[in-house]
Length: 272
Image (cartoon, rainbow, N blue to C red):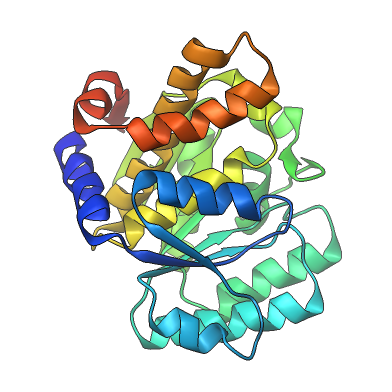
């Protein structure tokens, strides 16, 4: 699997896939920069008058509901259906699902009307998608949901993957990625990632970049999340004691420097 991820990373840097985002205005700049750092190309177009055209020339579509409004919801649905029509992978980040009726209805509608390739969220968000009781702390997972054990997390990821025919990825202290048949645990990362706004969104954007140069979306999702975890570890080592701002910048630096040797050396993944 690690070798497959290495090949996927090489493909990203060789193909430089265009990754279309309809994302939130809090983290849009971070998402663009992290996609550039991994070697892909970002575009952030959310007006309904052009989303179909932009999606049609892209290699992946990332939908992020962090700062929802009626205008972008309509654009997400139009872009998602165009991506499905053209067999372009759609990556959904249901930010804050479970926190409000608008987020809940939007998540449910996107999952009903658009075929999602990868669904990436925290434990609270994915528990909501699975139809289980969940509690959120704004857009973050609640402490109670974060305490769900690995076995529970695996069961939830597998259930969601089978229900929606997608790869389900739950990110947290241990990341769990499943396509309903194979399930992968990723142990890389650092608690410092939770101190910076947007690291989850950046992780989803990396998954989008990997999907834009892949046919196996389990490998792509694992590769994107693994890259973020390793970059977080390296950023913590180089800048973790300097403060949140320096750590934030160092994440992008480490993604831009990430090579296959570092990925192989530091990867802590195993299949369930």
